[in-house]
Structures are given as structure tokens and as C-alpha cells.
Length: 291
Image 1: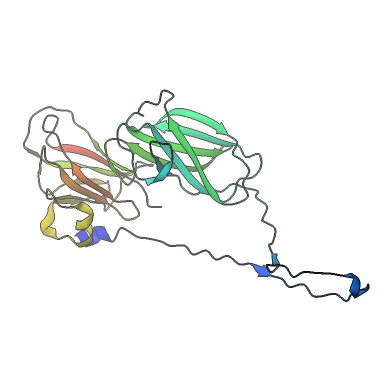
Image 2: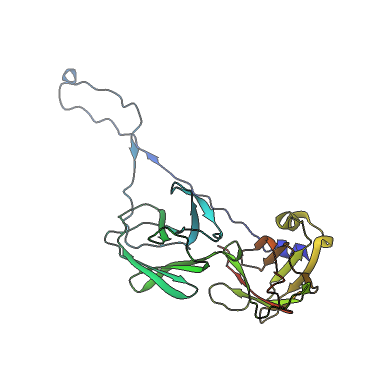
């Protein structure tokens, strides 16, 4: 069963080669007195560089997310942001930026539009990365929720991406708790749905795996055994699932959720609180497509 989940993770590589053309000029027959001339060989051979292609249209890759340190320097990419994060940074790679490009930026939180901006990025004929930060004017923490950044060229959507602040999140994915009762329980049945984070459409064939306390989720995916599994389930065509075993409350357990074509959740310590647990315990799990 764990081999099926392992097969969902794929990698790709891209090789780019550059070429330069060295040109050696042929000597011309002198027309004047050779004794009046002097010369010196160049220290480096002459290299012909063809003119750069004219940048006429901005093309962008998918949005991904970057983290910043306390000095405001970008430190790398992230899959989610913890509660209390004051700034999030959306980024995308592009081919070039033509002159007089007008870029619209729209931010939404939990599906509600919260901020818009119109930018005129500097002309750049070369491939590079565009970044845009979102923060509060008073530098306080951003609210927990699902954030979406949409970038537009005129009326056309150029690229978009989502990320979550808070909740139980890994790989730009969230586990959302839905609790309506307050009965104290020692264990619960868990059922729910797995959906696409953007379209909200159900995902068929996703695996939901709960491991025994103390098992490392990522190590288990590489070389773990079925004896490490506490409970598991596979979604049907409606994205619905129900774990085959009851889950103890007030116990931090490793969870994995994966589906073909989507990024995999590795949450090492998801806990169902007894004070707010229901039986059955409903969940909505959002998966983000792999890049």
C-alpha cells in the first residue's frame, strides 16, 4: 500500500546548453605602405554575439512561494506559512518583460478579494523571477487562511497560485477541521473528502494514511512497513473516504495524504482535540497539483 503512495512522487530535470561562435577575421591586402602601420593582437579572441531576440510578450510559469528572514532577505521557497507570519511572497519565473508592461495583481483570502494593485515592472529582455509581497501596513501577523495571488496582463490571467497560513499544512496543502459538537471522546471515526485546492473538485484514488505515534512520515514513505500504519483509506469517485480504524484524540500522529499528479502532505503531528472532537470526525483535505 505504501508503494502505491510512493509512486505519486516524480521528478523532472531540464538541461540548457549555450553556444558562442568565434569568428576569425581574414587579413586584407594592405593598400598603403606597410612600414607606416602598427598593430597588436587582442588578448582574447573576437566573439560574435547575435543580437538578443526582441521581447514582445511576457510569459510566466506557475506561482510559487518564498520565505524571508528577519532582515527581509529571501531565504528560499516554502510550501506553507505558519500562523503568525507577517509577510508572504508570491513569485513566478518569466521569459522577459517588454516595455510598458502593465501587470495587475489581485489577492484573495478564503475566496474573498482583499487587495489589488497595478504594477509597471522594469523592462528586462532576459529570463528572471518576479516577486510580490503581501503584508499589513502595521507589520502585524497576517490572518490564517488560504491565500491566492492572481497576476493579470490586461483582462487575461497570466499566472496564479495559492498558499495557506496556519492550520495543518504541508506542500501548499491544508487539512481543515470541521467540528460542530463538544462531546468529549477518547477516539473517533474519521471521514471526509479530498479535493483540488483550486477547483474544489473531488480527487478520486487519493490515499489518506495515519501512522503510529513516533513514526517519521517521510522516512516511512521511503522504507517503512505496513506495521507502522495505524489507519488508512482511499477516496472514491466523489473524493470521499473513511479511515478503516478509529483515531485516538489528543494524540499527535503522523499523516500522509497523496494522489497522482498532486503534491503530498507530510504532517508529522496532526492532533484531534478531545474538547472539540465529533464522532464521526469530518475533514476536508485540499491538495495542490504538482508543478
